[in-house]
Length: 160
Length: 160
DNA sequence: ATTTGCTCCGATAGTTTTGGTCGGAGACTT
DNA sequence: AAGTCTCCGACCAAAACTATCGGAGCAAAT
Ligand code: SF4
Ligand code: SF4
Image 1 (tube, rainbow over the protein chains, first blue to last red):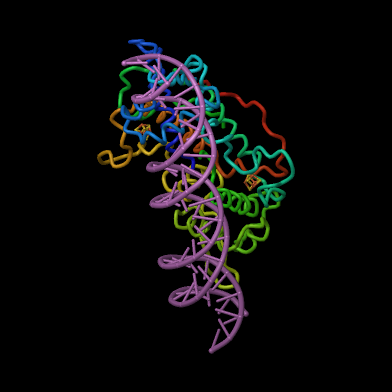
Image 2 (cartoon, rainbow over the protein chains, first blue to last red):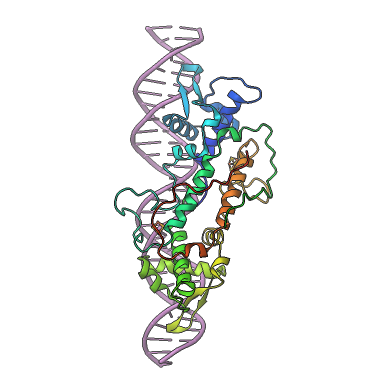
């Protein structure tokens, strides 16, 4: 739990790659095909294909099925594609708990009536969502990404 | 993905309940047994039992196996039990990606070498972790929890 | 016009995770 | 000694995730 799925990971990888091609330092705007991305990152081709299809269906990328020169390209500028959008495209609407976006009656959680942790959790949920929404593909676009782990980034003072 | 498991949910529910009993407004310090919590919240008894065992093993609660009057009680004060601790107790160490706490070589992710999204993602991971660590059981302890959804809490300005 | 290389879509296996169950051993109270 | 309780490990079923396959359609190159 609380972990990205492989598909989400692949999606981000692919988007980052496409963004680099189109908007990177050595910008070379062109469409890229599935196989290219897959081989570049050692991702199973067919699975990546389906991920890209899903992204296309959600308007995040555009498919150019133009025979041999077909492929995909970003649908908008990198900064207009937030991580939250990507994640929601890949794995339905995201929610920490079963209860958080329930429209009709209590279809899901049996203990909703007796539940005292719902509000605090939905608050956390909201925070995470905003965090994910505040980052875009552009933020992944740093060339020469250092592989060191950020050991202690400034804690952005969560109010107690 | 990016969702609490039932077990984690049950754990929080149970901890909240125990905290209420011991530290709530009508404080009535006593040990509570598994069945009581389960019936109170309509949780399968045996599953909750295992969750509680796990929590006990991680020192978050104390087991008092004293025959008929046995049960569990919090091991520390509610404010000293953070959500991150609970989650890690229930589902191993939490990490958004497969790559984030790898000690030895690249056991997991095959595309780690070509990966340009690792650093940004680990930053997000870190933010979420700190968020989870900044909330404790005490924060779940509000009596009469309002069921309204918090619409817009302060976004803690992620530095660009 | 035919071939080629691509996207697209649905269906389908294999595997892992999760949710939930069972039964026995140990410990304390009565 | 009997009865309840926790404890612990093993077990099972269902769902989700990962990955694979096969075929249809389309546009450019030949
Ligand atoms: S137990 Fe509470 S927080 Fe968890 S899913 Fe049910 S209503 Fe939501
Ligand atoms: S693709 Fe990159 S971010 Fe994802 S698990 Fe692998 S190394 Fe980590």
